Length: 192
Ligand SMILES: C[S@@+](CC[C@H](N)C(=O)[O-])C[C@H]1O[C@@H](n2cnc3c(N)ncnc32)[C@H](O)[C@@H]1O
Image (tube, helix red, strand yellow):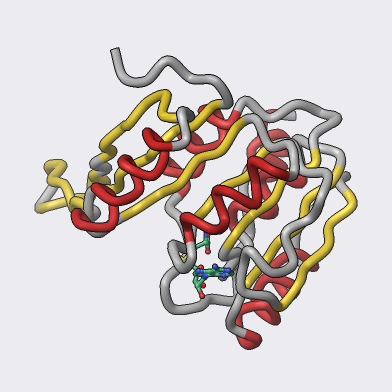
């Protein structure tokens, strides 16, 4: 039983792509901040390996995955085939805001191209929860400002994950680059 639960909760990503995947711990925080609901239509902007698309597809009714690079669209599709999920998933080769659906509820920006236009488009489409992950400091600053200007800045979380490994019988750690998780909600009160 516990073995089945563990396998179901994992994401299989046998096909890889440069720039991905969003790491498991970062996905966990990101999806939790998005507060996904079973009836949601979720949009993954910059699906790359499909890691976020797949996890979201186990939690919501519909997912639209947008990816500007055709070879990464293929990787998203290949990894989707290797996983179980219940949502209706549409994968589009498009550079957002192009291809952004008109009836979305929540969105994740893993890619930062045109992010201000993507935010505007998402808000017009009815999105009320939006999270953007950023690795580069300068882009993170611009993202925070863009969320603030639109009155949706709710939280900024800096994540730094390290994984233990065996070092001559003891445990040492390998650290990953920090990630800024910019959390937006419609009518947010700003940082407190
Ligand atoms: C850091 S990766 C995202 C990783 C992904 N969440 C995963 O788990 O594999 C960023 C991706 O966003 C894509 N991208 C960037 N801006 C985009 C946009 N405006 N529309 C669609 N794709 C975009 C890039 O091509 C790249 O594949």
